[in-house]
Image (cartoon, rainbow, N blue to C red):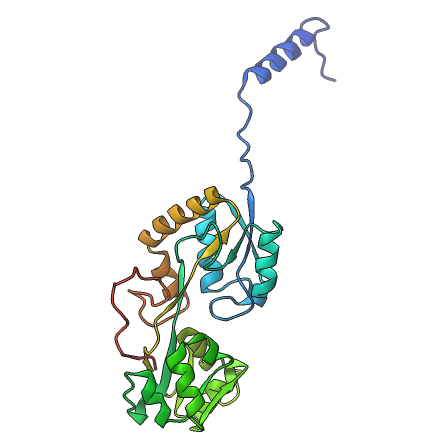
Length: 273
């Protein structure tokens, strides 16, 4: 049986205790403040709701973390998101309106999409009037007065939803032109479980300017930190990284990266097949 001297042991305990008090406490990282941000509803590949990922989802999350926040992404219809922001229940929402709006962080690319073997050369919206055209739901409301006039006069114009219907109409030859966001169309064209999936070469025609989106914040200081982190992340290659991850065309100059005014339009036709 081990024996310890009756005297001296308490002194050792006291010395050890004093040494422990003298040592610095281990550093404990304080958690980042949580920021609740609404990005709209499921719209792959921008937001893939059931997998908590997507181009836009990851872009905003990365920028917010770089700005010093823990992002909590919410997927809400636009009207509900704006009401929640106005009521102070969330911190930011996708919007181009509001008192504290960020710099644009993403650009959607609505284009006229055709099968390349048809050799259609579209340079102006009015030229769509001579073709069978299928567009996304409510396209007449969002694509300007000239497009609305063409759609009204074109007896072969239809609007369809959900997105796979537009893909199937084009691939089966039941329409000549589809009006859709390029990356949404490509996402559904590449899904193995989509009926009538096809790998025919696609040509896209940039008849419409890109639609750029920003975030509306409740706090201007948070907005400013987001803007600074967005610029830093863009310079570090975040857009190129996401384009590569999602295997999008134009990876060196991603089409979903917002461009400053006057920087020039996308070339009229881009092969995407």
